[in-house]
Amino acid sequence: METYLDHNATTPLDGRVLDEMLPYFRQCHGNPSSLYRQGRLARQAIEGAREQVAQLVNVHPAQVIFTSGGTEANNLAIKGAIPHLKCLAVSAVEHASVMEPARRMGCELIEIGVNDQGLVGQDEMRRALLTRPELVSVMMASNETGVIQNIARLAETANAAGALFHTDAVQAAGKIDVDFAALGVQLLSLSAHKLYGPKGVGALVIDKRVELVPQLVGGGQEQGSRSGTENVAAIVGFGKAAELARLELQQRRTGMELLRQRLLQQLSQMEKVVVFARQAECLPNTVLMAVPGIDGETLLMEMDRAGLAVSSGSACDSRKVEASRTLLAMGVDEALARCALRVSIGKDNTEQDIDAFVLVVKQQVKALQDNAMLAWA
Image (tube, rainbow, N blue to C red; front, side, top):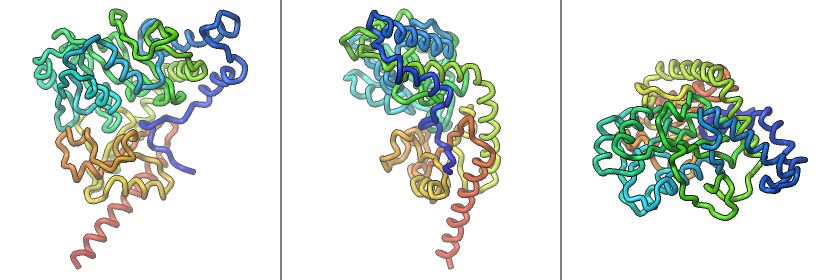
């Protein structure tokens, strides 16, 4: 049986979530815009899920706009927050679903630099704000390194300069506390499949004062911000996953952090292994590491042969053989960046899973050393 250690790419669907979804595949098939009973039941289910998602991030339900996932939520934030955007600032370590729409906006784009731990500092933020961006986007936690940004402080600085602030909290939600009000942001993105919910559904959470420019128009669903008949079953699943994530947050966080520390302790005993962003505060489940001299794709395939599922860098870019843009922004040498391998732990992983991963790393390090000795012989 495969050992799954790639939860930042996606999480398995929680059985309790599936149970909530099934009636909306089988019996409750009404269009939520219809006025008859089946339609009203579907609408009630959506609004119940909206309240569950709202509670996860401490907002009013009306602030939650359902989307097809984190990518659409990020696109809607970048494209829809401000009409006729003139200047936009994003961190150099953003996910492609922020970076790509930012590059296509046709406005002035400022990339905010990070230090060698992947953190955006106040000096970098102030430097970017000198160009007077109307919108700033910095992800809450990196999908690659797991580094957690000080969003509350960065948002306060940006707001003081007159800019709206968006944060991609897709990787953070369900792993650490995400409180929209405490963060002081105006837009925040979420995705269900990162917290044991279904794929194909997410949300953009907005400040009530933000008037979004819709990117999908037609039926006027989602308060006119996102037209299209709602995926009721997926939204219901998102709601249940959000409820479970809120109720079980501390239990999950503690369990994952214990396994992460076990992994870090064992990796630290191997001279050849590099752990990135070791000095930064990180998600309780994420470790990005490398064995210099072993390409990340090669190590990934060795893991796969051993029945271990991990990722080399960002999963969304896994088909591209290129160095991690995040690591390059942190000043990591390109050759070392190509060796990166990400472990992202889930709520159901065990100590045995961590030990199995470390065993393969040790075997590969030994093989590398043996090959080096043969080359010198």
